[in-house]
Length: 235
Ligand SMILES: C[S@@+](CC[C@H](N)C(=O)[O-])C[C@H]1O[C@@H](n2cnc3c(N)ncnc32)[C@H](O)[C@@H]1O
Image (cartoon, rainbow, N blue to C red; front, side, top):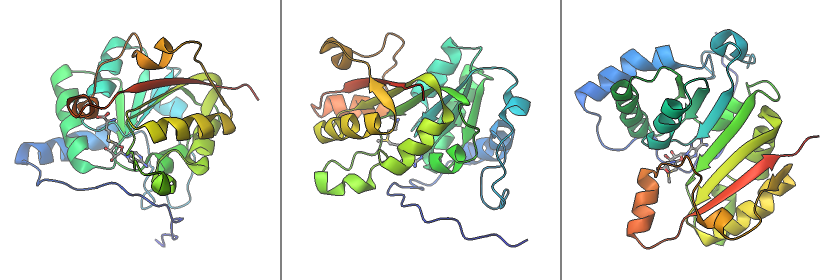
């Protein structure tokens, strides 16, 4: 089979970290195939056929978490919303292994995992197929001159806007002031309204929030979380 060249996509994060423990390798081998949302990788879907999400998830509402890290928030949300199908994306294999341990431990059955770049998944999702999306502490690239390395770019946001239903909620958490500014500029341009009336709306976490590993690190290091809520505009 000839695999076409995939389009160039800059990815500025880490894919591998510490050597995986033997039990983590077992989780990756045993659990990932079962948790897959469908054929996303280029090797398994070179024609880029759209995913049949209805066949995979039935009529359940689909939520998407981009860059779930160790999976704290994803597992918590899946546990507290058992009727939802939550798809998480994370290219950092050590994070994926950590999350698989949490999924096993919690016994949740409504999580699906794409162990790769969220953009590869989103391009295969039908229009308006996602009811809620989370981008929690994306790799920050704090310097303004590195903005184009960030996940929040017109390309990623246009993909996300297409797969979100009109009216869908999009939550972004960040502790980097320039990322706040940048997000507030770019996300509305891609077809979202920022839902904030008063400072409490971005200073206080969402009512169903659970703090993530990265947020804990940010707090230890004296940085201030911002919680930004957007709504996908109707066309
Ligand atoms: C700073 S960490 C935060 C992790 C987690 N959300 C948390 O709050 O602890 C950012 C994560 O986003 C992931 N990431 C970066 N680019 C991504 C992409 N294109 N698709 C999916 N995940 C991505 C990174 O691998 C990394 O684990």
